[in-house]
Image 1 (cartoon, helix red, strand yellow):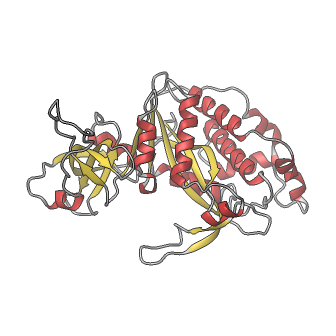
Image 2 (cartoon, one colour):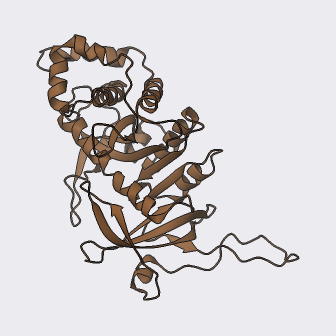
Image 3 (tube, helix red, strand yellow):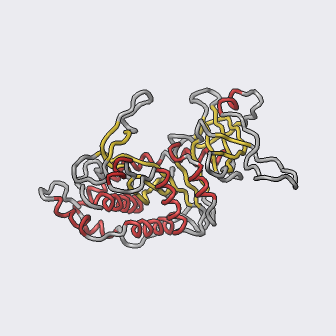
Length: 364
């Protein structure tokens, strides 16, 4: 709004924590706008989910906690930071003026630390629990459209896969396969007169490392989309299995192993809850997840997420919803320079209001 250097800037933000706001209604309207503008009828809705850390401190921030900082941590050292952790759901859309799809933010909900949940007297919900709620919401808002959910290894959970698979209109879930995932064959047919409970799983399948080292594993050469916007020649091995975890029904999945003939990276493993999806498509979906990191960078560097002065009440979550809306509207305008266009809008309010007018683009 062009008030960043105003001495009493927080006075203008008072409306965010004093007035009643419906962040979910705003997100639903935003999703309708994105689908109507960028997605053709019948095109799948690809959703990316990830969590990000907004580094901020202050006594009045009710949702703050200490979390692992993914940017400052390394493989051998873990660094923690105080701030707000957001679970972000974004829409991957193709745009006519770009060679790569864009990730546009849709929903941001706080993921509290266990100590913060206990302090507020709330039942603790993990990031997987938050993702479970978000995908139920989006399926309710888009009951007929095909939906694909892509998340990193932190969201690879049998419970989330069961939520996606058991919807009346199932959601396809794609993610990294955990190294400790217990995979089994389907159960063998039982004699018709045998008493007792029916088995839910069959024989245990080999572990991932065993499959990679096994000379009998069948590998198929393929060219898949890769990081940086290019393609890469890889070898793929695939199969179906039941992913079992104690206390839950086994989850039918298609697993995919990826190795590089030049050995430029370690073998990777992915899975998908739709057993009929092609292995190359599963890899392409997961590689497209990297677009969400670019969106996190824009929210922080261009919109000053870590420098926000909002601390009390629901204002941080409402401001996160407005950042999502602003980024989507600027992307929808077709400008390649997000930061420059945001500075232009801060001094030209009339141009900002014009972004709210209905507008359509040619769809791919």
